Length: 451
Ligand SMILES: Nc1ncnc2c1ncn2[C@@H]1O[C@H](COP(=O)(O)OP(=O)(O)OP(=O)(O)O)[C@@H](O)[C@H]1O
Image 1: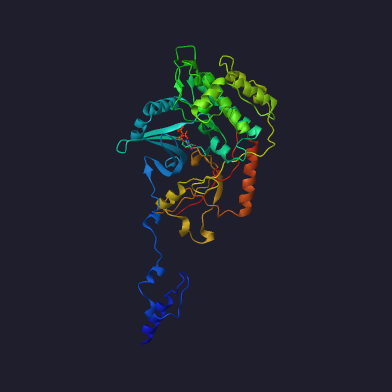
Image 2: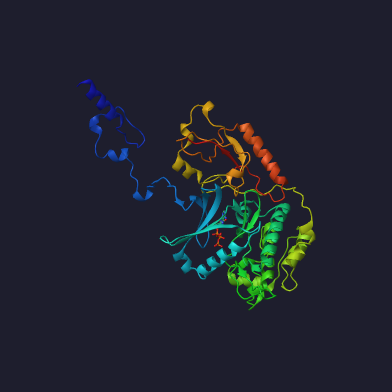
């Protein structure tokens, strides 16, 4: 037997297994390898257990580069996108025509939402940036300003499902501003609830989802409505009792009252095992406020959840109420925006980065540490074009190089600097009146060249 053959024999024997699946016996002779032993070498896997990880492909539609799914509603998915011309982070609601046809009033509601959002413009109302229609795929894209979270997610993530008083007050003030604007434009929202209140990374509240909103006749003096399609737990007694007509504005006041109740107690004023029981309870209008609740807050809630809509507090009166006008000390810890469970990202960073890297390459090819372009922490407000960011230090790549990209790159920043930056951001946000988030990642990005 020559040396080569001896080596082969030895290596074959190395893989001959013993009785136990994990035990291998280098001493077992080649003759011991039989077809019966083979299953021990390759454990059997059912085809249904096989998961193929096909790499995600970058997708561009129009000038938008698509990122991950942000959430899904009854009308369709909402995805994060990057406007490649302005470098603004956006959200796009994708709706299939076929699905809209199956939803009662689906197409009418979407048409109405687009029409309304196009004409509205207020800091506390979500901005519609663009609308696109793909005739081939029969899909409608509503490009919206980007928000980092909705208030329902934040409530769900907190231990007792509520906000501290001052944080609830901060959101409620913005909700009242947004509602006041809508009512001045003679628009009744009809579906105010925490999941329809979004937050930008700067902590600004945005009222969204105007799919069931109603634009009142400009030439009449009243706010009488005849239909409602809002979420049951947030509906007032006049709707639960099936009144034929009702004041639209007072419906929004009631829903905002249920929302404030939920913000501050973690509960709902009316509950029921099914919609009939729930409407029966709302219809009676009797609810309990927790005894420990702040007196002024209890008074405001009682006035917002007044059974008689004619006597229910108006938005102007809310803005003069003592709880509303009072300064609220930021004593308790605030409820932070939870991380993204899907992507395991505690900071909800930009999900388009992976696709930018796929399209333009990673920054692996950078030379030595000394040759790397400077990496700078910049304040990047999600809705501002990067060109407006004063602290941005642009690296102009040599001709022929790939274009520079926005890239999250914390490695180039010392841990001490990261920590101190995070601290100052948190403190800064705590003192800002509209700030709620207090986290660094979505606001702070580092910019480095990727070539
Ligand atoms: N502009 C946005 N920025 C970031 N996330 C958003 C934006 N708009 C919606 N989302 C998220 O996408 C998800 C789906 O929103 P969508 O408005 O389609 O449905 P919904 O209001 O949750 O449900 P439904 O439409 O059934 O009432 C939600 O989790 C919402 O927080």
